[in-house]
Length: 312
Image (tube, rainbow, N blue to C red; front, side):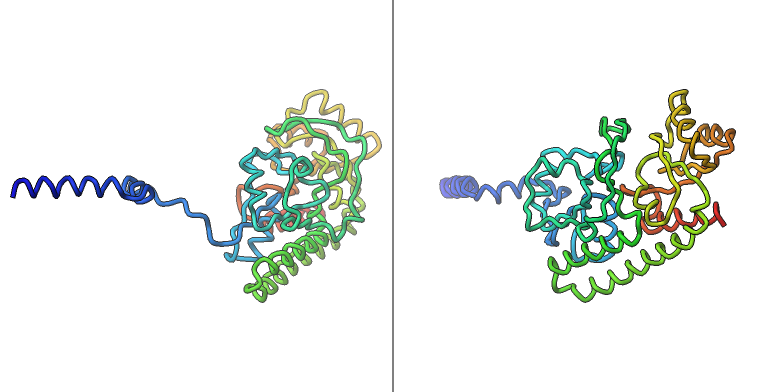
């Protein structure tokens, strides 16, 4: 009996050693560490937050939408690392803003069949900016705003065209959801058209008021809605030193603005310094990246409401 027990023990050890590698690995995996299975939903990668919002509004949970740019960087000047580029190359759909928005895209190879330029419908109407100064902000390093203006969605009519391009691409990607995609697209476009109507109504009042923008990102907004707008190169938390104030005085010499439009909430010191010059401050957030509160639509409605209150 003792000999037979020893024999069975030896056989058990040998059989355990013959387990497939994957099965042995599973035995050693802690119960608290779930397998990192790839999502079965189509993967949609986007160039910026507005396109992320459009895709999520339109497709709902039928796809997985991702923006890889860090929240503390401007996606327009973000430089993706190798892992991010690989993720783009492996995506099922790549939604680009167009208008030279993603500077990195010219330096890498992306699968053309998966790339959609959402502003292609109005490419003939891009605005070209010349002789813009080079500056830096955030971790993205130095950059210039010369070339093609890229905040295309601040013209809400163009934003609706971009939303339609997103919709068309998603309907091809997920044909089973075509009806829902169509309904969601119409609802989104109605909201964008309502914003366009409100801004168009405002334009009749705004045209009488010279404005200064803290940053040169409002080209399409100004063109669509007739804003009399010139820009400096400031950040909301910039220290308004002699150089910055000299830049402002140079603009004001031929452009007697009494309002400064900021990309984000300006510091208290900046508001007070401008107020002492009889220049008031308001925020019109381009919302290129994920906002701290709300979403793209709530931010845009807040932007328009701020202008309506400032210019009743």
